[in-house]
Image (cartoon, rainbow, N blue to C red; front, side, top):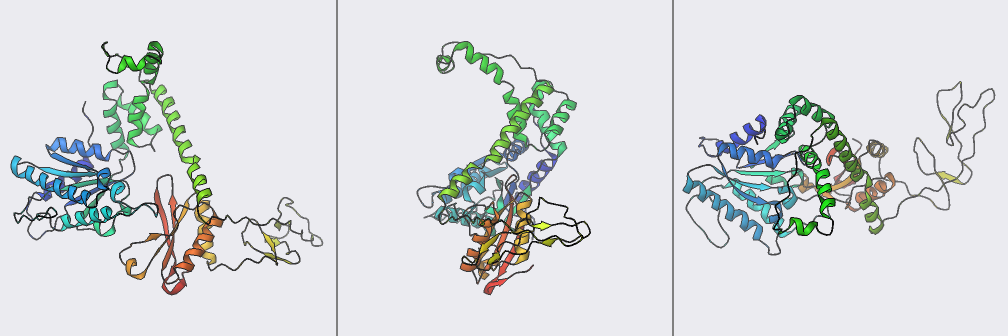
Length: 459
């Protein structure tokens, strides 16, 4: 089966790898190439295809190997495999690379719930050291003065913003964001269904119908087409005997006819898969469970008091009788607010609802500016969630922000309470709010709301 290699992907990897094997006078070449992008877009598989096409041998490290109960083991592993790869280059006389899959999963820090261990620090420090001195990589406890051959390092991940910022800076790591365009998707999907006799026109229709899906969606779709034959085989053998039939069986392995890869059938199956995706995205049950177990979680519930209706001015007719907050009149464009009831104070300045509370239970004024409150409302209105981060003046220069909340906030009352707490606890530091799109796991907007000395930002 001939798989499709994106020309952009091939060009980027080929240039980076070749450049590391060529002496360029006066030119500093980054050792590490970071390939990042959305999940399921075939980053690792495209790398493997490029390596095969160029005849490159690969030494693999998984992100899951970057943690260990013994401090220092992952850093030693990286150094050891780097030296082994350098030796392969010397002995075999051909290009070799070191590839680390899912680096952000093993060495990244997503929030305060992610433990930052000694191994995480050492892995970041080791990769930085290799990037700075690629021909002098030593094992702990020993020293070899013989220069090593330079080894290109390819790392993959979804979100490199979770990595230690000095590691991903220019000069140490070259970045390549992989997002296949329509032509790339058509070429890759055509390779997936190459044995199934789908015409290019059918492949294009399938891609256009599910244009927002990642590459692995189409591979999974092809696998789902075989489900009916597998189900019939299980019913034929029997649920109680299927294990004996397929595991260590003396009988001939089962054979299945190639299913009918009809376009309409694949579209129907694909829509079922999309439905299951949406159920996962919209359930958010873990948020409810965590909220119940979260320390000091006290949701703010406004006290409901029926407002006293405003008297209708003489000669005017009330138009909208459904609004409990504002009365609209035919000959006036502005809103006439309902007067406050006696002994009550307005609590929420929302443009939609007015909540009132008795003077016996006063709510303190919030230090959050009206502009910031408006930005927070706009974030929630767009379907995003809010993260709250802080940093001192020294770490601000390196962009080493820390999360104040251990979760992404999904309602206005909680966001106000947590932001007030952060502003109080870190009055002499920078504080910002971050709009997060949970569907694509992407930070959309970052706004600083406080600067050092407790100065509230109005911008």
